Length: 137
Ligand SMILES: [Zn+2]
Image (tube, rainbow, N blue to C red):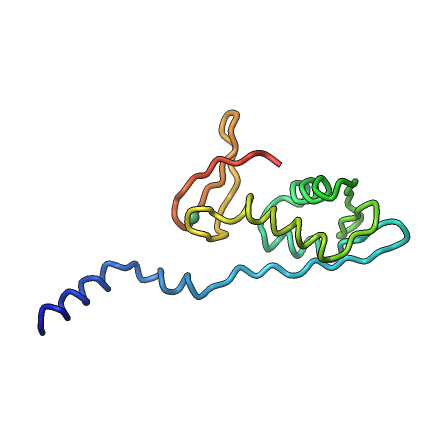
């Protein structure tokens, strides 16, 4: 074996095995399904999406309704907004929520949890261990 091959082998052995596996995965959030009823909008797959982003439903609803500048409430398994909102409008706001409150800014993985310590909020990443300061919703 020549030196170049040895060098290559050593470089490969230093890359964690799961680094390759991770890059192939994708974080798939379903598209929001909204149904307009009179002057209200029912978000029909709210619970499914909350399950995927792995955050409390109350917090997600508070953020989204705040950004849409309307009132959001729960009705059965739906979230309901006052006013008429399209799936695209909700998806847009949801994308911001995920960017700030779910995705780790260091490694880009969604394997995070929000933690509160004294007066600060943090996004703790279980993939890379980074802890990022966040503003509470
Ligand atoms: Zn991370």
